[in-house]
Image (cartoon, rainbow, N blue to C red; front, side, top):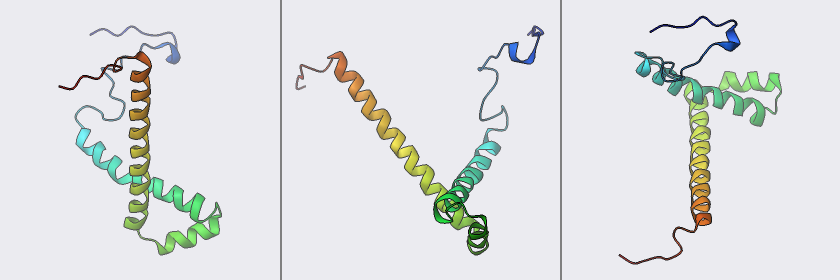
Amino acid sequence: MSIAKAASFTQQEVDLTETPLFFPAGFEKIFLAIYFITLPYIAGLLFLFFYVAEGKAELFLSLNDESSFILTWAIGYEIIAALLLLYIVKMAVSFSVENSKKGKNTHFKRP
């Protein structure tokens, strides 16, 4: 496999089949565990900071002292789960609207 040298960093050729975006080859399980722990925790921290503490650092720090890691993680997990469910519903609705515009299922036949 030969790689041509690009003139600059922005002009390099990118092959996405050789570059996994989320899981580096050989480290898939490790990165999955890291994502499973960190993403809900970060989402929970953001929720606590912006929604509960209303963006006030003093209030957030007092909340963060009282709340445990698992509570913050559970809040973030529920937020991510709700967002994923909303995305699935959006994709299903857009799929059904797209198929109804094509006029494929206008004549329903009972099997």
